[in-house]
Length: 301
Ligand SMILES: [Zn+2]
Ligand SMILES: [Zn+2]
Image (cartoon, rainbow, N blue to C red; front, side, top):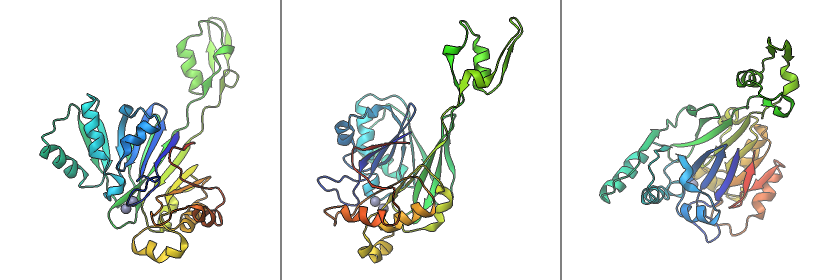
C-alpha cells in the first residue's frame, strides 16, 4: 500500500504548491484520490503510468479537488482508452462532467461509471479480495467525504523451497489457507507451520481532506497506520479555520493523537503561507510523528 502526494496546496495554486491530488497503489490497483488542476503534468513529472488508473475518488466539489478531472477524462479518450473508468464522488459531479462532454460534443470510447457518495453516513463503497474502501463523513462548507482504505491481511506465504518437487497445487492451496496436509500415498504429513510463513498484516490508511476540526471522525480512523489530514491554517488563524470549515496544524495533530494513529501527514496549506516550518512546529508540538506533505514523496504503508 503506497500513498503518493501530488498536490499540497489549497484553493489557488502556487508555483511550487499544486491543488489536491494523491495516488494510491494497492498491489496492482492504481487509485487517484482527488484530481486538482494540472494533475496530468504531475503524472508526467513523477513518471506515473496514469493509463492504469481505473478508480478515481473525489472528496467534494470545491474546484481545488476536481478541476483536473475533465482534462484527464479527455486525455484518456485521446489515448484510446477502452477500459471503464469508475468515479466515486458527490452528487452533481456526474452532471458537471456529462454537461462538459455534451457541450463539447465529445463521445467517449470507454464507459464512465459514476457512483454517488452519500456524505451523511460511512459506507463501504468498494470491496474485493485485496482491499476495502469506506467513506468518512466530514464537515465542510459543501458535502465532503474522506476515505478509509484497508488493505486486507494476505494469506500465509508458501515456502516452496522446502517442498518436494511436483508437490500438488491442491495441497499448496490448503497450506496457504492454514491447513495441514496428509499425503496418503507417501504417508507423509505436511504441517502448515513448517511449510508456510505469516502473510502481510492488514494495513489502514485514512484520507481526510477538507474538514473543520471534528472529533466525530476519531472512531472511524482509530489506530490507522497513516493518516492524511488537512491543515490549511496555523493557530493564529484558528478563527478563520472555523469560519471556512478548515483545520489548523495543531487541530490535525490533536485528531491524530486522539485516534492513536501511527503517523500523520498534513497538507492542503493555505497559499497565504509562503513557508511551512511553522506548520511542522505546531503539529509536532502535539503529535510527534507528524510530517509535512511534500509533492512527489511516497509513503509505503
Ligand atoms: Zn480544498
Ligand atoms: Zn473545500
